[in-house]
Length: 138
Image 1 (cartoon, one colour):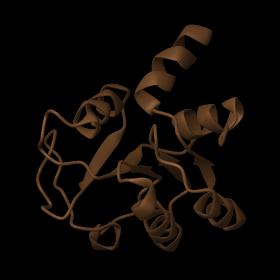
Image 2 (image 1 turned 180 degrees about the vertical axis):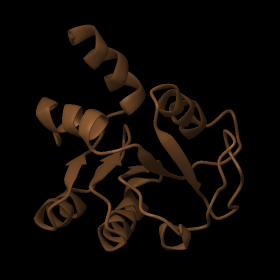
Image 3 (image 1 turned 135 degrees about the horizontal axis):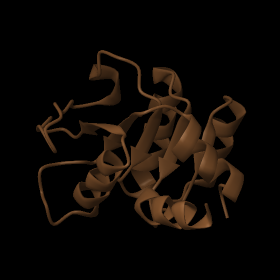
């Protein structure tokens, strides 16, 4: 597993409150939409990143990470594994503190590059699952 319990907890509780959600659009049927809502309820500011640059959950969207005119703490990735490595590299360039690849998103080489750059990273997990689980642990 890529991202031990300590790393999951650190990303969710210590890395700040601005999460760029790559792949987030206004499509309510997509997993990213629901997860972004959970992040907001947990007190995170979400920043939609999608080619359409739509406003989602009341937050202005941007076409790419590079287009966001402020710092982001965590980059949450809802794109397929073939595209995820490039997003991780963009997160490093953006100066993010952590990268989170959603369930089913795995790129071992990107994990290695991102960790080597000093960022925390989790792969193949979902913060909407981890948040309540961590809350139950105390």
